[in-house]
Amino acid sequence: MRTTLCDLLGIEVPIVQAPMGGAGCPALAAAVSQAGGLGMLALSWHPPKAVRAAIRQTRALTDRPFGVNLVLAFPQEERFAVCLEEGVKLISFFWGDPAPYVARAHAAGALVASTVASAGEARRAAAAGVDILVAQGWEAGGHVMGEVATLPLVRAVVAAAGARPVLAAGGIADGPGLAAVLALGAAGAWIGTRFLASEEAAIHPRYRELLLAADETSTVHTSLFDGGWADAPHRVLRNATYDRWEAAGRPASRARPGEGDVLATSAGRPMRRYASTTPGPDAEGDIEALSLWAGQGVGGVHGLKPAGAIVREIAQGADAVLRALAERLET
Image (cartoon, rainbow, N blue to C red):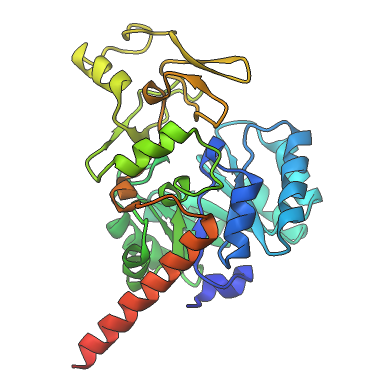
C-alpha cells in the first residue's frame, strides 16, 4: 500500500503516528518507523539539549525516517534550530503560522507539515510552501484546532491542497478508517489514540486501561484542562474532574471545584487538577482525575500491542477493505 506520501517521506505505508505530547517518546517513534510508517516526536516543551538527545536516541533505534512536531503557541526558535542541525526528515507545526519556518527548513533539507482545520488554512499553508497538510477533524484526541468533522474537512482540504499530500487526522484507529480517508483523497492517516494503547507509549498503566475500556461515547470536547495551555480546546476521556465541574454548573477558571488540588505527582512534581498534562508511567496518585487525552476513535482501540504490530494491522486492514470494495464493485 503506497501513496504519494510514502514516496515523499521514504516510508512503506501511509501511516503517521501523531506526536501526542507527553505520551510520545523515542521508543514509540522508532517502532512505528521500523514497521514502515512514520514515527513522530513531540518536543515542544523539551529544553534544547533534551530535543537533541531525543532525536539522537530515536536515530540510534532506527535508520528509517521519523519526524518532529513543534507547537507554535509556544516559542520554538531554539528547538527548531536543533531539529535542523540534527537533520530531521520532517518537521510538523501545530497551532500557529508555519510560514516563518518553511524556507529555513527547506534550506536544511527538511520537509514541512502543518496541521490545518479548514480549507482556508490549507490554502494559506500551501502558499507558504508547506509540503504536507494535516487535516485535523473535531473527533481528534488531545488539543484540537477546529470544529469541522474529519470526513468533510478532509474533502475540503484535499480540494484546496493541489498536488500536496493530505494526512487525515481524527477518529482513525483501524484499517477501515484508513481506507475511508484514502477514498476521500487523503494520502494517509495521522493516528494518535490507537498508538496510546501500544506497549511503547509513555503513559500510566491506568490511563491505558481506561482507554481500552472506553467506547465512542466516552470522550468530551472541552477547554477544561487549561493549566499550562489556556484557551486551547481539546478532547479527553470523560472523568470525575469533568463530571464534578459539570455538576457545579461549569464555572469559569479560578471558580471551579477543587481548583489547584494536587492529584498526583511525577518525578516529585505536582500534577494539579485541570492541568494540561499527560500521566506518565512514573505518576502516582489519582490518575483517573487527570487529563486523559483521547479521540472518538477510542471505541476502535482493542488490545495492548507493540506499535509495529499496530502499524501492520492498520495497513493490512485497509488493504483488505479496499480489495473487498473493488471486488464488490466488479460484481
